[in-house]
Length: 171
Image (cartoon, rainbow, N blue to C red; front, top):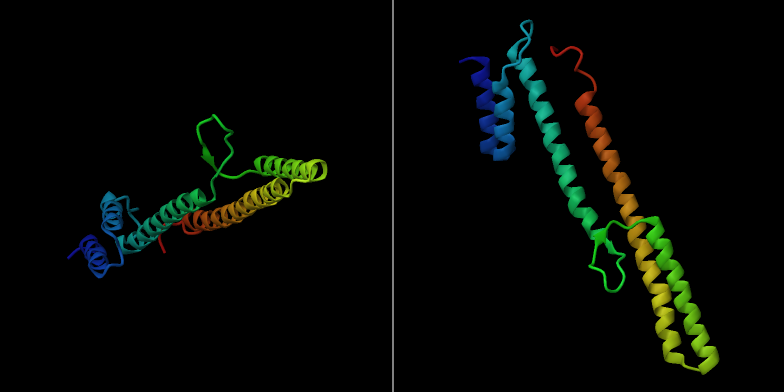
């Protein structure tokens, strides 16, 4: 049995054991069958490196998918009445604008209380003026923290994919 057949057998066994998904198996098999083996290297050492690269690429795709799903949890709607809603990641300018609108809302509530003695509008405008900007700010800071974590994970994986072992493909 050739080294290629041995390696194909190894990845088939990983598939059967559940260590690889069908898609991962197909990617690893395609990598093995490419046959871009330098003449001075054994097939086994290159195959291990290729499998490691495939696993890193799959991990990178997983991180990207997870971030896509996670960031949608932080989306906010900055549209005004009459516009179509547009969900988008929170941003600093939008958060500041909502905070300023919140301060204006509190001011309006205070004015209604002082001028007309209406306590209910004061409470409503106060809750809106404090609660809405707080909600936007929390979403903004959580989004930024998640984005930094995602970028750090992606950079680490990318460094593994491009770093070390590329100059000499034989070990």
